[in-house]
Length: 193
Image (cartoon, rainbow, N blue to C red; front, side):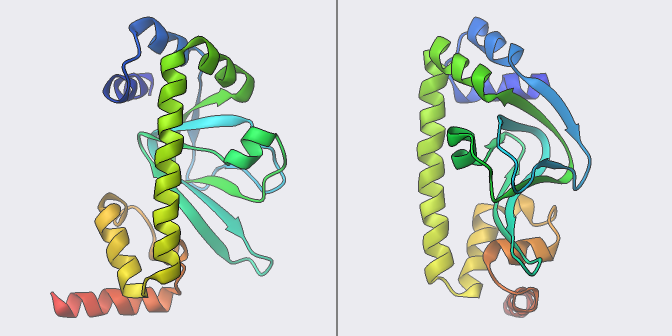
């Protein structure tokens, strides 16, 4: 798991070997079973999470038990509830493992210290935040203006590696459509092929 993260940092950043070792030294390794939670509604998000292996999801649950999935994070991605993490306030969201996963965790005080002592890490974190903001705006625009067919086509185009890893009910929740509509869209797509 450490090797995967080290390779990720070498591909994505210009951190020195010493800086990479400092970042790794601050991490805690955690293995998750399928459906195991890292964060539940009412908790405070106290860690930055890097997914070395597996797949996590970030979602909310409605009063009637329905789910609204906001994000999937496979290998080589980060996850947290930014508002709860930054303000250290209770979250209204959940983070759990869709499949068995291995993650690295950094507690907020330690990660904040790394951002001060490793300036290149701070620059990289700012780039990730900027990219995340752009992706979230694009996803919101698609959610508000696209047809179910367009939403599914966008998901297939942007996340083809997730299609075989996710149950259809989770894809439907992520797209904001019913499972019945998703099945119809997929069926119509097969007929056109």
